[in-house]
Image 1 (cartoon, rainbow, N blue to C red):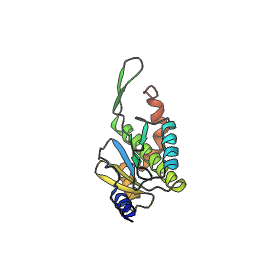
Image 2 (image 1 turned 90 degrees about the vertical axis):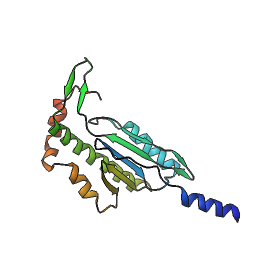
Image 3 (image 1 turned 90 degrees about the horizontal axis):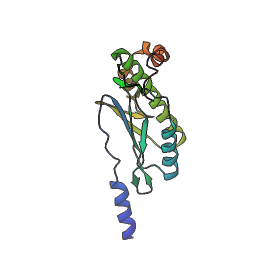
Image 4 (image 1 turned 60 degrees about the horizontal axis):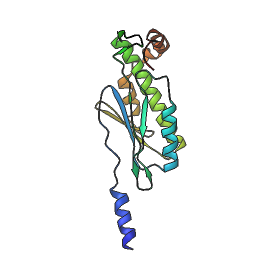
Length: 167
């Protein structure tokens, strides 16, 4: 009986890792411990994701009792970059905002998809803004605060303009 009580206390006290607020990076974490097989599948899918604007999506799964906590981040703003030939290019702020919007929408869609396929809910943060996926009433406002609705039509054009960026 005592072992059961100790286990119950450990499970109740286990908290997910904290996420930091950075205006250039979308951060996210699972709200609860994720079963091991589901966590490994999501980590594998995140590692295979390519064709991002400013950086790869990172997802790690620190161990927890009965599974893993999932925590990740994705740099959504490029700012400037160096080509393979050693030249530096500055990205226009309007282009960077448009592509950041596209990345945030794509990431929220991915987290929503994982929420449908696996038993997981997410906290997301971008700078001081916070939301929950999939059930947060603030999720629409969270995305709208980052996005200019007219920018979605320009992403292919912007992507071509900076096609020499590292991928």
